[in-house]
Figure 1 (cartoon, rainbow over the protein chains, first blue to last red):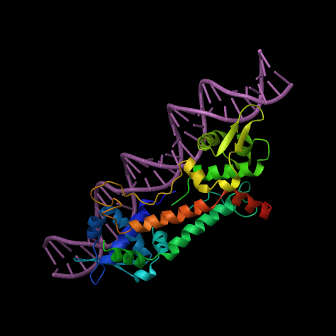
Figure 2 (cartoon, rainbow over the protein chains, first blue to last red; figure 1 turned 90 degrees about the vertical axis):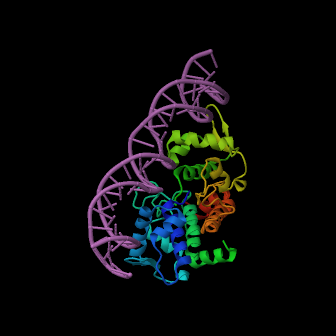
Figure 3 (cartoon, rainbow over the protein chains, first blue to last red; figure 1 turned 30 degrees about the vertical axis):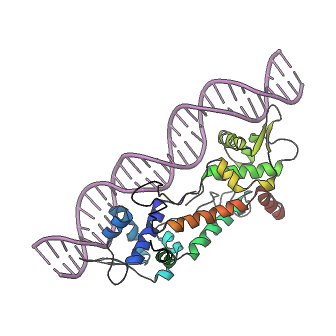
Amino acid sequence: MKLTSKGRYAVMALADLARFDNINPVSLRDISLRQGISLDYLEQIFSKLRKKDIVQSVRGTQGGYVLNKKAKEIKLTNIFDAVDEKVKTVQCKKDSKKGCNGKSTKCLTHNLWDELENHINNFFEEKSLEDLVKDNVERRI
Amino acid sequence: MKLTSKGRYAVMALADLARFDNINPVSLRDISLRQGISLDYLEQIFSKLRKKDIVQSVRGTQGGYVLNKKAKEIKLTNIFDAVDEKVKTVQCKKDSKKGCNGKSTKCLTHNLWDELENHINNFFEEKSLEDLVKDNVERRI
DNA sequence: AGATACTTGACTAATTTAGTCAGGTTTATA
DNA sequence: TATAAACCTGACTAAATTAGTCAAGTATCT
């Protein structure tokens, strides 16, 4: 069970953005350099973040990206959702007649996986970008 | 972020084993049929489980596998550990001089991933095979 | 005008997963 | 003691996913 780079990068980039976001937009180039993420890959990620209204883009020289909401209001769930990072614990197919379909015929462990999924998602729903930035300021890193 | 089949199957198979484990060993063939997991794959999995003393094998006709501990004492952590299902949230390499090494130079989000990893592992450490079987008996599935 | 920066979509190499396959060995029982 | 059931092992592979790269734009500030 592992987190993919896309989700991890999205959070890293946004944490970076939240930290350096004052009045001026932050360019992907800067984030790329600071976080060591390929610029091309960042562009893919930010395109998705923009479509979900998590960030706003500013074009032209001195352009870049700005958070579209307060850091407090951006939860990890929102970020992962935007870049299609999903928590998947079951394979059981709905509407399958035989085997586990999650309804009438549940596999022995179905409830377990559901619980696990909820457990993880709860974590994502509670954590906000603000928590991340705060955490770092406190530690003075 | 998803759970791999190997880990899922290991838990499914052991839950099945715990349920049908009375005096007689349970054959992989039976588990294979009941759980819809390929016999060959099950053999790989049980070989690992045996090496970690989670199950014991009984050879010969009417042979099979038996739990080596009480269901209560077998936690999900033990199972996942046996089949190399690991929770990986970071990529940060120890001893890397530049970038995040988890010590002196921590990436902005390092603590977050550590927390996430702990959060998930806690779940695995708390759940035992017994919980699974109980859960199913109660629901009469 | 020109530089900077965003935007989009197609493509691909590497890795991982989820098995299969083949060829054993061991042991209870008839 | 023959035989079948069951375990045991290691090598191999096809498919899927990931983690990007690459190319060719478009928009806008100065």
